[in-house]
Length: 222
Image 1 (cartoon, rainbow, N blue to C red):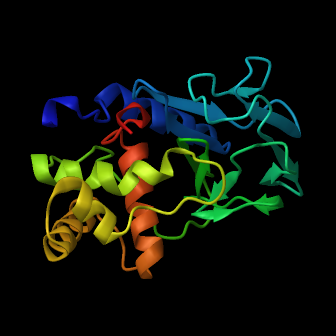
Image 2: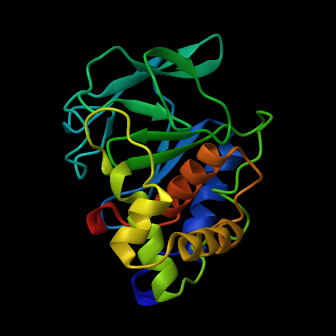
């Protein structure tokens, strides 16, 4: 329902802008309660991430994140995500599972467990992303659109191994609609979340990332 949606409040938008003005790269994500969190990449050349509180970035609210999941390393002025097999559920960059080191670029979507983090690097040339647009809010959804979106996101909660969004047939079976009706609702959702024109699979993954990062869908609902 619309009352369950978390939107970016003026104070949250102000917080993002204040961090951007510092000029240092950072991550924006939402915890299990949908609260916006910002993690600045500063204070060292290697920062760990995981569920344990001893990590530099502790995602203790997400049971799908490993105790020590991975690390962020600075190399030649650029930050990378490192997953050398420590994590059980893996790390995914823009929908692709990571093995070893991968360079981060402004606007990248990083999924660890059920948590989606958006990487921002002020001053770095970004590629198109609608996750942190000027509005920064989750759009209003009808009850049916919300059911379709939850069904789409359900497989991406953080199961072991690669997980793709639900297929149109799987969504149709869950929400008791025809496949054609599901396609129509997905087209409406692509428009509402300002998803750019991408290949089919990338487009669906981007919609899932948008749903999590804007707080339209909470991992607890899955």
